[in-house]
Image (cartoon, rainbow, N blue to C red; front, side, top):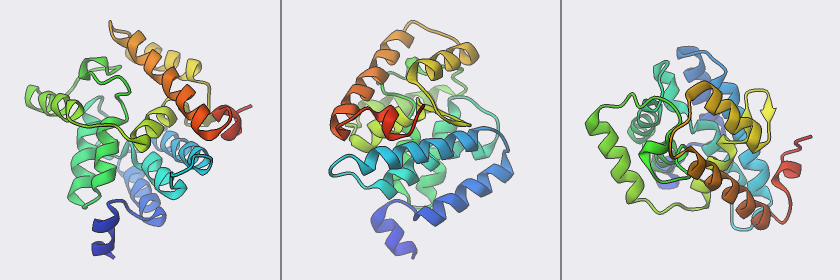
Amino acid sequence: MYAQNMISKIPTKEEAEMLLCEAEKRNPGPWTAHCRTAGYCAKKIAENCKGMEDEKAYVMGLLHDIGRREGVMDMKHILCGYHFMLSKGYVDISRICLTHSFPYKDVRAYNGKNDCNEEETLFIKEYLENTEYDDYDRLIQLCDAISFPDGPTFLEKRLVDVVMRRGFNELTISKWKSFFELKNYFDEKAGGDIYEIVNLK
């Protein structure tokens, strides 16, 4: 099983759900329900996009915030998730842990506190600069931005919610534009409004 996972670079759906349940026990909070919403949205959208695997998208959405298993933290959760998934051989998930917060490729665009040290921040910066996003990176970035713990939501509501909780900086508007570009991209790729696809009322 392990060798197979090394080849696929992602856990199975069942393994991913188990990993999230374990993480929830370590650090309970609404973040796990948010992840389940993101997984649902990613699966529904991927089902409508040619060339995308819906189970792969689901697993990536489910585990994008897995670094929060280590406790309450801000930007550092992406690095914790990256290292945790890498330690298990899940290379594709480790990548998603780092890229999901940056539709706009600038580490300074993170909404919230940078609780990483200088070396960690430099690693994230260089990783983003040297990574060419694929459609799974883009999809999880979008699904992260339309997922509340209690279900899918409109981009505008989620983006304002994040700013109200974590603050606004000089790159926030550029980051918001990137999210709306992602929505337009997946609307076209899926052949319809992604809000309807995820059954957002």
